Amino acid sequence: MGRYENCAHFDALYDATENCFPAVSRQNACTILREVILAPDDYTVEFGNKTYDKPEIMDKLAKELTLSCVYESPEQTHYDILENAANIIKHMNDGYITREDYEERSEFLEMIERYEFTLFTAFCLLRALDTDDTSRLEELRLNITRLREIHDLISNYTRDETDTEVGREDYERAKPIYKMLKSLQSLGYDYNFSPKERASLDIDHEDDTDLTDSFNAVNWLKRIMLLELRLEVGTPVEVRETAAAPQNEAPQESSAPANDDISERIALLRGTYNKRRFDKNRFLVLEKAKASSPSGDNID
Image (tube, rainbow, N blue to C red; front, side, top):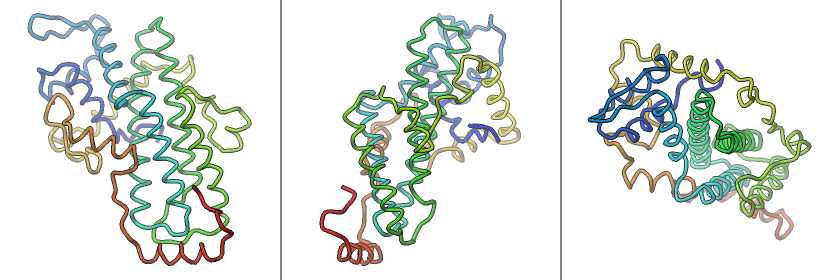
């Protein structure tokens, strides 16, 4: 299965369509999205007294999708993502992986995947428009690459396990990654790794074919839409919306996300979504590690 072809976060596209056209229902938002991707170039949609052509709708959707991945500001979002990534590296390598540590990791990776899919769709919509606004395309390309790199760092330097002890070797591997993520927070979100750094960390996405100029964005949009339609065959829209909603996020019922929903997403980025509870096993392992370690040798 290719990247994104499980359509796990497709509801984000319907959310964006609803936000672009607040007067439409969820079902009509689904119809608009399907038709604007699969329809011929002279396709139009009418709302009230205004008519939108296909390029207008695609451009509006691309802007809305991009904005949906930013809370407060691009700089703050960048800072918060790195902060949460650093905390996960720390919590997953400090002696004992609790269920809470593992859930924190899983929820963060799911959020990163959702943002990546959302921004990649915006990227493909702009590519399909054959826009001359190369700065928007380059910014999206950069942000998608950054998200893929952070996803790789979490996958490469944390275990996909829970309720288990972490050895000294894992701790030593993770320590420089934690420090690197913390140092990147002082840079703008347009920072870049050197080719040598990307290779040594195994996070190289500079040559991803789907981010090159030769990638057929129109075919990808049609393919992902047809895959989603295939999944929806015989299943009411309302049922799929509930089933597809990410964990801890209620299905959308209005044209804009509720304040509580936005607060939860910001809190997740800032690492406060889960309140860290006392864990006896973790405490004993950490106390043992502290007693046998040189003073100050911690991931801090």
